[in-house]
Length: 417
Figure (cartoon, rainbow, N blue to C red):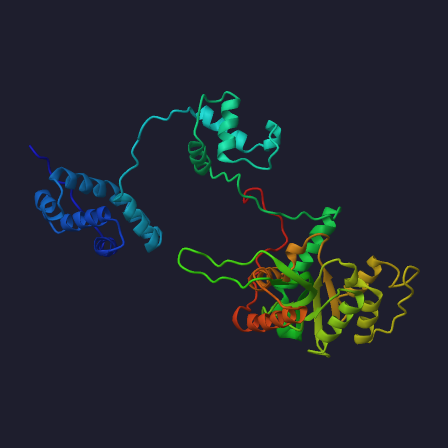
């Protein structure tokens, strides 16, 4: 004798979501069907009537009614405490089939753990002259070690996917060469504060905060055959052979508050004189204004010529001494200290050694490489220079915006890590 059907209770919000799911053309048919079951159950229809309407038997209808009734209190809690999107996800989960057990695994948890442990080892530890594992070589290695009698490379790939291990991928990272941890922390904090205070300083005293760096070795490569455009099922094809026409260096300025690239210097070299001329050209944008330049520790960023230029521009009546002997000009450290003096109208903030990741302009250089250089073909260095300048103008109109800088210089807490 059939039992009593589970009582269906739904809120107004739940009803709207269920109606949306029942009519969604992109949703799986099973999900639309089950949403309709709950709605018809709420309208008072019997299981047999619902079964005839949705094309199921009454026992299946009863199962989904019970599933909804058992999950309703949980759905109410989500509706009260979470967003509508999370409530929809929870409703979809209630109306989705539970995972089935499937066939028993051929390999024990201990064997799977050992397979994953080997995947985390460098291959050279196993005597293999390769830089990283492939699924086939990993399968061969676990059989060789006697962990399993046999295993397919596809099964190894599935275990790697489940464990979110990707031996075929790698990413570069950069470590500072600064020996003093306290000095490194102070320098990082100074750079981050400079970024975070840039907008306020611009409003209060019209201070320009600019990231500056060089993009060297930009090759004017001309492909010996035209590029073939993309067509259906075939990507763009670029001729491999090329003619070298020379190289250029881009000295760029990235304004922190606007996200725009300011005056650029493009030439064949990156010398002390080139950098000084670039700074002079930049200062002409606002000769009486205050400037903060964020730069790395390259030697041309703290030269005798640069110190003399800043001293003249800031009208500093100071005996600068002699390079290598005495005074401000004596050493790199003394010149950097002078150029970093916060009392100067024009000053520099230097990154920690080997920490270019802190310089925002490096991101823009990456954009230039991807959008102009990597797939470009240039008939001469003048052609390369022209295309670079055109792109920077285009960048300022289309892409330019300030970074939302969130890093404060403080190390990650252990709990967050």
